[in-house]
Image (cartoon, rainbow, N blue to C red; front, top):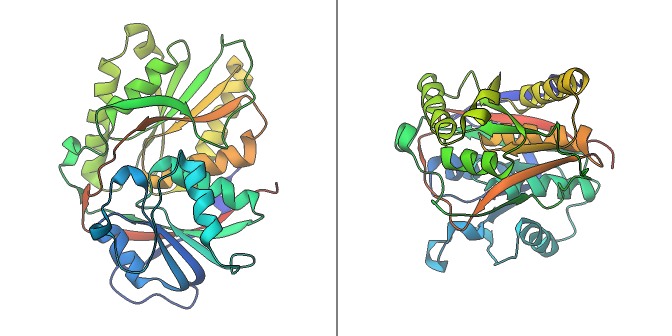
Length: 319
């Protein structure tokens, strides 16, 4: 087990100006039209600031924000991030980089972090803005109804073995119960564990999260429900999430054995960062994949207000 909580995090002011430590050479944010991304983008001091417009949000040219914008059709998350990287000037090497993870569609964020590692970038800062509340509380829809496929995220394909007798799926359980169901059904014979955000971002969000997760359980067969267990990490802390993943996976291996491991982060972007850090540090070149239920469209504006802003200093392992 690795203790990722040694990494640095701090809360930034929502209303006041930030200090000299919060200045960067390159700032990257995925655009969604709400306070959580726009307010942070405007507060950040950086030499170069870029908006990424993920294709699944379906923006028209008239809807583009002001500033440097990258918006291009791509086959998948890897192609999109690589194309974006190619338009950047030569200031990336040695630059202080900050990424606002708040508005990203999850696979794009996961691959971007992998790409930083591949390009030799070992350290970056990540920002995450918590909402005051989600638009329709537990009824908020973050994506469409149609899942195109459940597949591995590019760059996170494991070296899997034919034996599936002790397969394990760990799902970062968020509000999207239909996505949880698709993943569980895709790995029907595997044991399932849920990582739930607790403490939650707001007091009422834990109850909302549990209500949505229970919908997914009810859509599964009884044999799968009996195997569905939960463990917890704060919804705004990627480092505790990564530490808990490390603890649970290593304990599971020693007690029950493990053939193939599948990780599926469907909860907060802070948890997505934790899943990605755990994979890149402990799971590369093993029978472990990050999988995701991909959809054609995702909702742009799902929250109201900015409650808190977090800064995480992420240190990636050696390649």
